[in-house]
Each structure stands twice: as C-alpha cells, then as structure tokens.
Image (cartoon, rainbow, N blue to C red; front, side):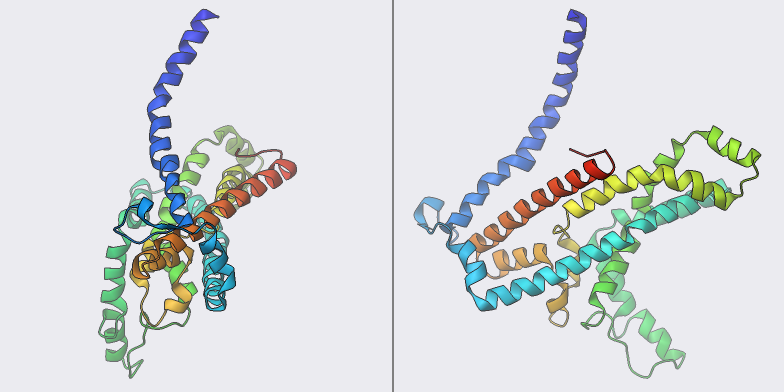
Length: 302
C-alpha cells in the first residue's frame, strides 16, 4: 500500500510541470477579461481608465449597426464551421484508402506529401495562392494561352464562393494531418479480425466497411465532439491572410472580427467582451455535446 502511494506521488510530480504550463498559458491569461469592464485606452494603465461595467456587452445588442455586423460575422462563422464539420469525414476515407496501399514506398510518399502542408504557415499558403490565382498568375496565364478564357478570372479578389474556397484551402492543408490519428487507430485493430473475415470470403471493400470503418467511429465521434465544442473557434491566420476589401463581408469570422476590432478599430475593451462571450458559449457547447454523447453513446470526454 505504501509502495503504491509513493509511486502515485512520483507520477503526480511528473505531470506537475504540465499542470503549471497549462495554468500559465490557458488560465492565467483569463485575468485579462477585466479589460472588458473598463474603457481601456492604450498606453494608459488600467487604473487610469474609466470603469464602465457592462457597457461593452450592452453595446453589442443596443447598436443596430453593431448587431447587423455581428449577425453577418456569426453567419460566416457558422458557415465555415459547418463546412469544416461536414468535411471532417474525409480524413477517415483518406486514411482507410491510404492504409490499403500495398506499395510501401508509394504509401509513405503520399502520406508525406499530404501531411507536409500542415507545417506550412498560412502566409506561405497565401503566397502559393497568389502565385497561382492572381490575374497574372500561372492558372490565368495558362487558361488564356489555351484560349479558354479571354479575361483573367478573379479568384482571390472576388467575393464569390468565399466559403467554398476557404474550405478547400483548409482541406488541402489539413487532410493528411487529420488522417494520422485514424491511421494510428487502424494500426490498433486486431489483425485476427481481418484474417477471420478473409477466411469467410470477405473482399477488401467488405473488410473496410465492416471492420475498419466501425473501429474508427469512436475516434471520429470524439473528434466530432471537439469540433462542435470549438464551433466558434475558426482560427484567424487563414482568414487574415486571405481577406481583402472585396471578400471582407463573407470572410470575416468571429476570431478575425475580434482582431480587427481590437487592433484596427482600436477598441480592445469591446474585443475582450466579444472574446469572453465566445469562450462562455464554447464551454457551454462542450458541456452540451458531452451530455448528449454520454446519454446516447454511454461515453464522454469530460
């Protein structure tokens, strides 16, 4: 009993540094929420700024222009998040078919090429997009030389199909990386299940449908719950580098909107208030998804 207690303390000491890091980077910054209660004007100290209480929260719903802008921003955020959730099934299919490739060097090559974009920053991704899809880019130049078009197609400086373009870029960047977890889950499937199915005459597609796919569903549902919990967290990098005066109406998601208000609009207090509401809604969504999962599947992540 004493030995078990000593071992438990040692294991606890091993995770203490990670607990401290989580506190410093995830919880300690929350003290900045206090700026939402002041009319903060940099570079003044917070004590030198006027305390306004819930003014900024009331502003979000009292000003008609602000409300209309927030409605459009939330529409963009919901559209991007829904498209992301709908395409979250693609890494499963990609992982399954990648696992079926028998040529090892070709499999490694495909996996490397599809995973590599995840490590490229969005700034470099936009540089590639700019080189390919501007008026004088490679795609327009090629189409004009082939006589398919007479004037350049505006891919980047246009507001048409903004949601679709952003989803496709995000899919290109994250498909290979998203498949890694499913490949790890496939590696953990008991090989005897496949052998028994082959003895019974199951084809490769039947193996994928009846063994591989059901084994990946628990992993998929956990990732799906996390995606729903992060429904309002689209990130900012991708939309920041792709935004311009032409597509700003439909590309401005909540994270980018907060940045634009705080940095470009010089209203850090209002941006903080919006971030607080976003965090509260995200935690609520996580609790609801966890509750639904627990009641329907008997499993939860909290």
